[in-house]
Length: 272
Image (cartoon, rainbow, N blue to C red; front, side, top):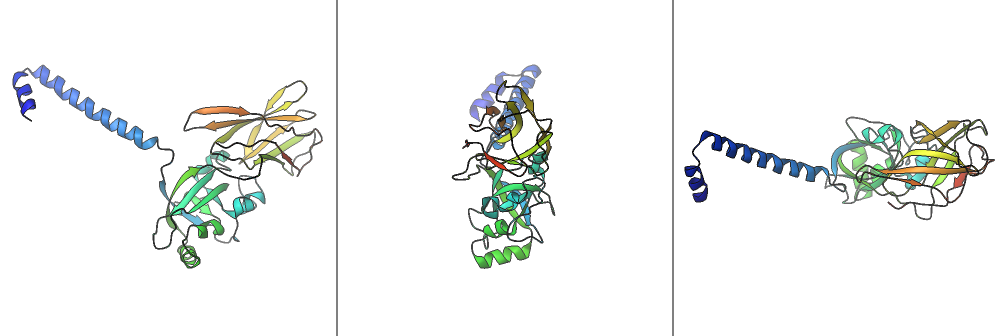
């Protein structure tokens, strides 16, 4: 305080006072901006929200989820699945994994549950509608799980985490609506890591002519008049946090005589 009083004693002109005032304001705004940037750049921080569970479901999720995964969407990850509202992101969020834990210390475990997004939905200002199995997994004990289920909707915190499917490669499931060679639709199963698949191309393996596919809904990629013969798949993996994009080409091709309902192992997996 002594040094500041000496400074202001010698600086007496209105112009200099204004300059000092503007400098202090600019310094304060810079500190606030840096703090805000630090607060919003945390990729592992938990976000507060609410979660419910499928009201009339069995232990697992639904096989008619908006992502288009079918029965896979009900049973993947041991049935620890969820519908999402804003995190659905017009289908880009399908297959993403989140650590979800409730905040009532009387009932809730520290780790909660890791759930895979397989559907779209919201209820009572929730970000997640978990399967009953996943909802119960947030509890410390079986009795605590019964208490959570009785509440129906609970306060939670969540963060995105890497998906993990040990001993599984990324797998292509041809949709039942497909009709070779006129129409091809498929979903992508068992994608590990925490990146999004934001674009998919199909390429002829002989002349390498590629066709960009449409995301018709959820995680379903489609094209009319698909390329002929064995097909090479190219997937664009995107990381919004790191602002990175990488094209990945599977080892195995989709055979030229692909059939509706069949699954094809890509021969590759990702870990980030």
